[in-house]
Each structure stands twice: as structure tokens, then as C-alpha cells.
Length: 205
Image 1: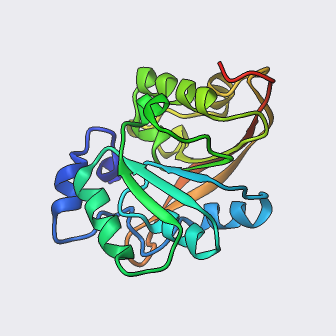
Image 2: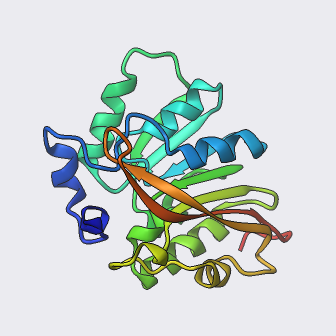
């Protein structure tokens, strides 16, 4: 039942189809909305793995400067179409999350709604290394990911997240259990982990 969100998905095909993907729920994940009410969001904001832009648009509508990136060109095309003609400080770019150093951006806030859990271990490490490289000290990173408690192929645990975001590179890290909802009517609820951490240190390397 949970295979629809597995990492082997062909996201180009999904975003090119007529039907929305199960994780497209018409807006941002409730767990991230709650987190954004508690976290001091600073610009610029980077939404990594933005898909068709639900979270990025939500944050931009709150008055923030946002860049959304995704590896899927069809997903980015749909995201751009959704904001055509709107007065939002928001751009969408095709980019590889495992090569964030290629971005010309120093984000102060990074949001990840379901990207980290879709990567294999090598991809996860490359992604987090990229975050470490582009985030200046004080930048906040919020990651919502399906947890291993959901079964099937999911692998993320609190211990794994601590390993990915270790001190001294990251500080003030909190990891709490929550849910990811799926389906147009939110009928599926998957165990998830919400990680909020802050870039520490004085250097950018």
C-alpha cells in the first residue's frame, strides 16, 4: 500500500500524468505548516524537492522570498504554471538535490517535504553534504520524512537522522514523531519524523 511513495518512482511520469500523485494533497503537509508556525523563517527560503510547488507557494504567500528546486522538469513546469501572473517572490528551477553546491544561493531557511526519504544512503549523504556547504551559520533546516515505522522500504530512524545531521556541523537539532498525509482526502496517514536543525560553525566549507 505504501509503494506509491517509494524512491524508485518515475517522477517525470507522475508529474506528466493527468491524476495528481498521492502526496499532492492540495497544499503543504500539516506537520510542516505547524513547524513553520514555530520556526523563525528567514529569507531566502529554499524548498528542496518542491515537486509542483505546493509548499513553496504557501511560504511565498506568507511574504517570503522562495526558491523551489526539483529534479523533475515536468514537476517544475507545473509549478511555474501555477504561479503565472501572480505577484510572488518565488522562482522554480530544475536542480539535483545531491548537487546543491551548483545552486547560486545561500539559503537562510531550507524546507524538505518528502525528499530525504526518497534518496538512497549515498544520495542522502550527498544531499546533506550539499546543505552543509550552502547553508551559512544560523540557517535553519526543516525535514519531514516518512519513517521506518511505516514499514515496507522506508529506512529513516531518529538515529539515522542524528547521523546525517551531526554536531559540530549542526546544532539545536530536534527530531519528533509526526505524520505524513496522502490522498486528496488525506485518508492515508504514514508515520513520519520531523527534523529541525540549525547550521553551526563559522566556516562555509
